[in-house]
Length: 575
Image (cartoon, rainbow, N blue to C red; front, top):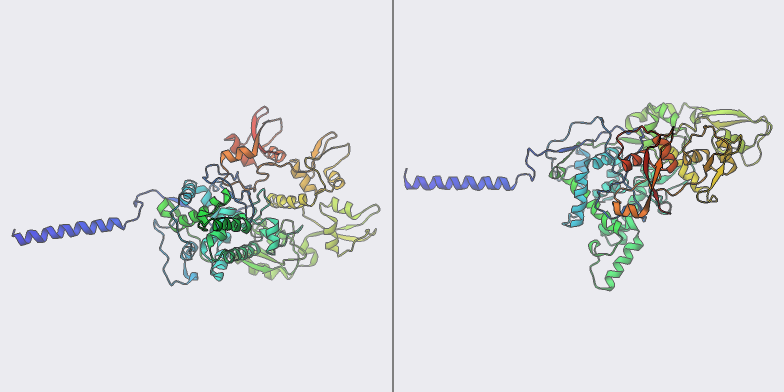
């Protein structure tokens, strides 16, 4: 071999080595054989199950968020339900969004969202800590996006129409884990966790029938209005706007002014803000980073179709929600999951006069609703007024209120007339448990004259209905407070609680996503309950107003059966 040949061979070897090194430098961070955790997402709406314990003690955040200008927890970290069917997972590497593609042309909604990311990624330890928690808790991510799949398309299109960053579509993951019935101890509600005052400020109607803070359409409109207002208020700084959404614009304004007076930077990372807000913005940025490249962190998201799941239909007036489900050909659970703002058996007689339905069910509903008579729309019974009847007595008998009966019959105030036939609701006791809890909260707020921990003793002949009427309490609220059913028999000498005690995690859908064990122990006290004959986890949970899943978690139970004498740990809020 000549010297020239050797020189060319040597050069070829060096060139091959250089190309190999270049290829390695551009290879994915994770090896192709690395195991991937598949986050499976389907578009089957949940059947309104009990929400498991929604504390996440492993979260690195120091406090929890509870919505616009509030300060309590509002998220969930329960494992995904077993056995849920799901589409096939994505390939190991998600396709990169291609510039110039029309948003509607993406097959996967996640790709459409990624293409609309606008917030700068930042290299901050606070973001890394939150990201580590999400990666270590894929069950939380799966359950949140499982619920999000129903609502995500609508929120994404609304953000796009306003030119807002699509990272904001991930904000309900942080706020409520996309649980429309989420409720915090600060009384924040819904996907976007509005407290009552902020909800009213942005036009969300709240009354006995309906709470717009849980309305998917209206609460999204209000949340984006609020975020846009905050963006303008803070001179186009989205991180300050997001921080203010959590703790209120006054808090952020005061922090900015404090730094300005001292000549310090006024960006989010240099402001003195509440601990929960300092964790809140990094959570969103961490979730953005995870969704942008899940494979880099050992996760794979199954795709979500880039098309609407629901459509809004005109109800042409008030309608019983179970009737609506029947004429649409869907289950009542689907109706309540898509329309969580209605917390009674029917829509609000004063509007809004629309429902959200799966897109395939809308034509059937619209064809049938026009054929319903007034009695068929509201599924009513008829009652003839007798001697001794009052409107209150009739309402109590049918498990409703005098105002509802007056509305059904277009009656003014005043005494009822013997012999008159009244329309009365027929199925008020058939509400799903989540909806009953939402209604009970409204009823409790309407009983401001009751003192904390007020109790009564049952007398011979008393019924739950009679006691509820005597003390101005809704019978369903009273039953929930005492862990019994409205029709249960009472015993003389039995004591009933008339008002709610302040219990940590007072319902299955209260939120305490990232309260650490230390911060939680400062807010709660431990109680040991000894199981009695006939006790069940459900009955005990109702007595203490916590969830069954919380009791299971606190006691690390591997079973649901109890035996007399067993000791259970219960955590109650400090007074």
